[in-house]
Amino acid sequence: MQLTPLDLEKHNILALAEQHQQMPLAEILSVATAVPPHRIEQSDVRQFAKALFGESIRKIDRLLPIFENTRITGRNLAQPLEWYGTPHTFPEANARYVQVALDISLRAAQDAIAQADLTPADIGMVLFVSSTGLATPSLDGAIIQALGMSPHTQRVPIWGLGCAGGVSGLARAAQLAQTVDAPVLLIATELCSLTFQHNDRSKANLIATSLFSDGAAAVVLQKSASPRVVTNGNGWQAAPQLEILNQHSTLFSESEDIMGWDIVTGGLKVRIAKSIPALVLREMAPLLQAACCDWGIDPSELKHFVAHPGGAKVLEAYSESLEKPADTFRHALDVLQQYGNMSSPTVLFVLEAYLQDVAPTGELGLMFALGPGFSAELILFRW
Image (tube, rainbow, N blue to C red; front, side, top):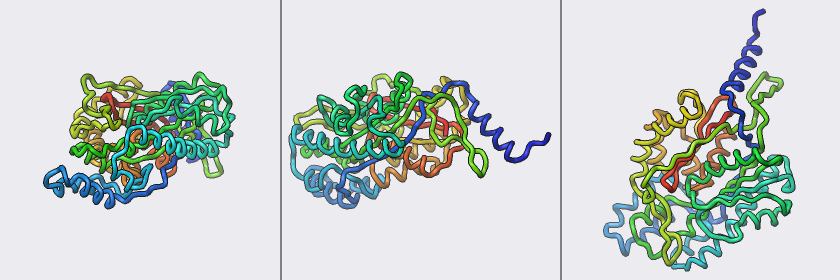
């Protein structure tokens, strides 16, 4: 019997769904994002930095092009720009962190739960990822109460992963979803701007001022029973839920100085090395090869890419090291241009944009981010 084109399409999608025998860890039901209300244009931040750093850095005009080189057009900050023009104590900045982080976390969480057609009472576990402020009890407790979740909702606060926290948090959420007979809520929230050290007039702080910003993202996911496909009146297509299949974590030895915080009197002082793009060029290809070996696949099978946009040069390094055209990372670049680097939630902003723009094909994809440690976090998914 000769197969019709529709039969062939169905057969190919089913073959893709059955490829690679590992059972999906979880499927994503929704992704939502939120930002604080203070929208700042990059040109205004440039002028702010020129006035502030010009007193301490000679020939400041030679360094100011970094603001254009980031390719960022605007960002959202926890406070108006003028607030950062005066020094603030760590307790004062951290109090703002608790207030604003809770607000945008709740907004992102409410949207994600509604998009998943659930109620807060349906959530069985909350993971809260952040590295830019401190709260004990952790903010997930306040989120659970504010949303009206069960007081028995399980809580997993995760601190200190920085830019890698979005991917690492999603991987941990997918693994933990296997242990919970209810949907899991992941929230990643960072207010990088509140770590700005007014009295630090170093080039590293100037670079951070040109790049980092604030935002929150929430993901609802649940344990996945098996690979699935669905059909509609136009034929067969892949299932509309992204399936998380596996993860891979790497910690580079003796690399603590590359990225992180130094604890100073004023709070959290950024530590960031300019060698990160070079490290990506050197390490990304062998890192991916090792992950694919662990997963039992060939790198050529990866068709979808969701990357944390650490910066424009980092995205260029991804493209070169993985031998992918720059357009492969267009969603990451779009998020970087519109929002800046928000640390952990940024890759989830990229994921949201990717899912809205790219139709599911049932093929494999890679989500990845680099962060303090120095570390790399990768997720294998099907979309």
